[in-house]
Amino acid sequence: MSDESKGIDPYETVLADLYAKRDQILQAIAAIEALRGPTIGGVSSPSGTSSNKPANGALDHPGALLGMSIVDAAKALLASKRTPLKNPEFAALFKTGGLHMNSKEPANTIGSVLTRRMAEVGDVVRVGRGTWGLKEWYPNRSFKVKDDEKKDDKKPQQETGKAGLDTALE
Image (cartoon, rainbow, N blue to C red; front, top):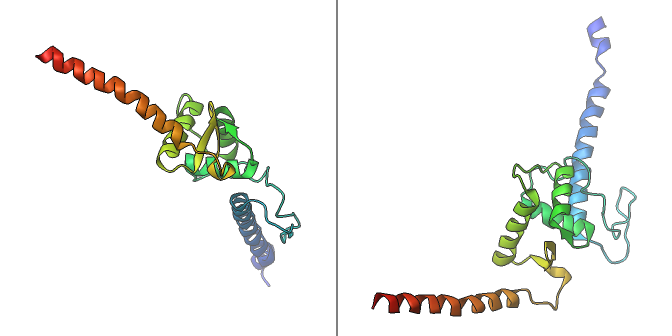
């Protein structure tokens, strides 16, 4: 054998590749467990952790939120933490997870994006001022009624404004 072939260990190369794939698989498992939530029966996952235990730390490591949108990252964090979160908490967790935002006020941007999501889809809901949860946590609570009431409150003001213009033009 030559000196060059002795210096390269093929097992080391294969092991390095397997370790990299293992890390990717563990990240995918953590993300799916966080989205799925607890299971009934407490069946343990192959890694030895109980799958009915909330995955509180699953998305707290650097890079866990890379490539996610603000909405997807917020939903994953809410599912993982299993408790409502405030805009500044989202901003801090996004930064820790690798989802960096370029806005001057990330908490305000997050609030705006989640408000739009609540109005359009409704899977993320405002449970308090600047505090967000998942709709599935509140099965008997209606979040759209308040929005409809606000629209009804604005209509009379808009109608009086139109009437004022009509009289002004006459």
